[in-house]
Length: 279
Image (cartoon, rainbow, N blue to C red; front, side, top):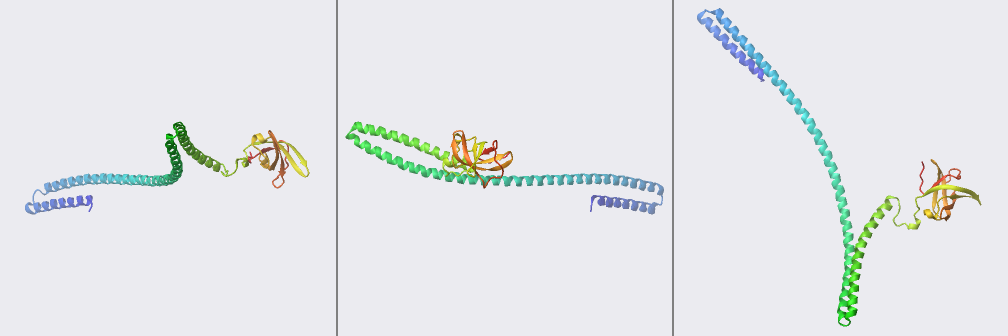
């Protein structure tokens, strides 16, 4: 039963009491009927006024309840949005944690390799120290020679320590260089002389000889070109073919057009490059 219903019951009870009193009064005295009716009407008016007040209070409370309900719903939506954001953030943090764990495993592997190398160097140092002790025992026979050997051993130890530090630096440099080579599409095991340099120039002359089209280009041995290297020929955005270098000089080279790659006439002024670069 809601609040308004309770109000109606109270009012009905009050009215019942009033009417019962009026009836008793009429029945008992049969006098002052008009005054009693007026008094009852006043009581009814007062009861209706109280009912209106209670209705207004009920409506106010219902409005407040509706507002609180809407605010709670809005807060629930906000909390749901924050929950989704927290889940996404937790997922990103988990991914970063996995990456850090992988990096830690790789670092542990690198440290293990370094420790193995250090153990090898320590064995070598131990051997050198044994030689130093042997030389020190010979000091009783030839003090001057022993002193010289001792100084030599100390120098060798210093050189070994320097070599150890240098070896660490070289291992790190080798690792970095290997990564750079692989990122640039080069095999670290490829001999340096087989690596084709990244240079470009132009066709400066063409000549057909014995059924072959020979091409002279404006780059040569000073640019790193060697016989056996190949260069790509293009004109603006059009690919024309490939030239195999036959002979080089410091500032130019001569090559043979590979007919298997030729896709157009090659003329003086066309561009050449060891890496295809169309623009």
